Length: 404
Image (cartoon, rainbow, N blue to C red):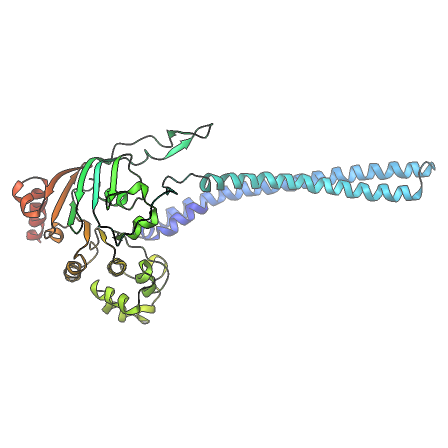
């Protein structure tokens, strides 16, 4: 029920937007009533157990004291014997009662521990090799290469058998999301990844960050296999602007400086100007010291996205990954950030996922993905002349703009 309540609160916008307050209230109320009934039954069982122990305790104590007093009346035991037997009887019986109740509580705690171990006892699927050689993202060129890479969600999650061996998938294997990807991106090249929804573009970005490991083939960064790099070393070479920006409940300056804590205020301000967010930050009551709220809820989607772009600008990594980085921005802000990107991208490898093809028309190279494969590869002009999927997508977007 705690999980259900958290789910409703985190999706409160949907609850209000679809007029679902009453039915969600009733759904939660039904669950809480059921839980309250179970809690009541548990408490009543415990209290009945306590009463039973108390009754048995006094019966046994009464029987023991009656017996020792009877023997004392016969002169078979002394007064000191009576005192010792009485004290030990009450001490032992009370201790036995407390032990029995403690065992009941222990069984309940064992259940809680079992639920917790199901989560914290999971073996991490992404691990670092202790023998990994150091990786300097600044000194090594930012080349990216995929060699016959294949990936399917769920296929890498393994369960342990009775002997502790990983021999069967935790969930049934699913259809491949990516298959037979062969791509080489030289250092400094600007590459756009486009294609219809579900083609595998965001999955490719996740693999580059090693949020998942490939199931087949090999992924290399700067001619080094990603699986052989420490995760922190790999991600230090990447500056990522995701489609959905998440911010910490800290000041704007702390969020911008998160990727490079040692950056000066002047460098952070310069990154904010490049991301076209400096002016709106200064218009806030506390400027750069304004708290953004949990996950940045005090800011609009476009403002959060510009701060995320500023954060990536400030990190200044050799490889820049943009996953729909300007999808929540207006045209004017997008054009300003595009001009800043031209300066930022100089000498850096850029991989940009985009749905708006006009934003990547000037890139060196465009990869067109469909059904987990790369079906076209070339410049925007070449692909338009080829009259394939990219040309069809370009015409559809141009017709949509013309209709508007």
